[in-house]
Image 1 (cartoon, rainbow, N blue to C red):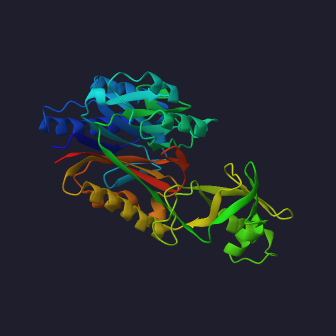
Image 2 (image 1 turned 90 degrees about the vertical axis):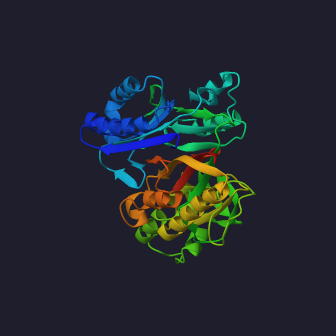
Image 3 (image 1 turned 135 degrees about the vertical axis):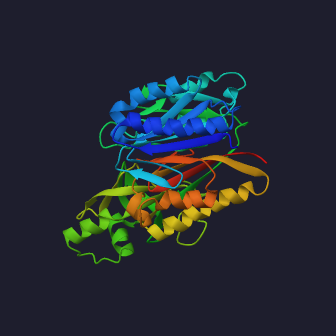
Length: 386
């Protein structure tokens, strides 16, 4: 039996949902009596946000020796089932040696890592409203051996929160893993470029002034094939559906023509100056960065998701077994973006193998390395030798 187990349930009353989940957990534990879960994941839809403290207490009561991490999301999922805009919870438990992981809250928490527990990589949950979150992520990344983080931002219509053996509102938390916990992680993009990569030649804060020496507005009109005298209302609609793909490093080379590489950070266009020709981007931009305008594309997102799952399976080949998996997807990708309910997680579940425990949530932003992404998915699998 795999060292990971999962359960999920939806109900208006969180107590009933938890009882159903725990009944399934108990059945799986009875099949493998030697298993002693030490680390648990709990993802809740935001319907349960107000009850998160009580839910965590109930989990501690049922599994007092288990450390719990998790967050709330607009949607959660397990296996091939997605719960979006309905009350639900998903659980996964892993039987990992306690010396091989460390639960933390805040980037400073890894400074005092216990002897013998090297922070090789880390799962991170965070509140996107944290003022200095990008700096905290870079700081946390620098405290891991690989520099690789994976995770996502809480998403909710009311109270966002995350937990790591305690309920937290701001900042970040998660669990660091030692090199003895083998895992593989990949990022999938959900947008397709609609124009060429350009170099930012002038920018101030989040105001994009010029690209390749030309006015930023003129460049996006060219890529959208719009006339310069387009009326304000159709321009507003087109820009609302257009995003800026910021290429983070010179090493970001697309795997295929017309697709972004994995270091591309996609940001909204949130303003335009018709007279000045500037665009306002939902992030700070600097001269020398590269940018390509893009739009969300369901077919491209599906093919790229298939690519990363198959890459992971290929990397495991005949020597490793996938014991458990986390998939964190953008809340902007869930549901209709993949054509029908449950389609995204069904694809991941099918390609990984239906016997692989798989849980995740729909985030307000995704984390990979020290970057914050949008419209992406981050898939991470835990493996063991065959």
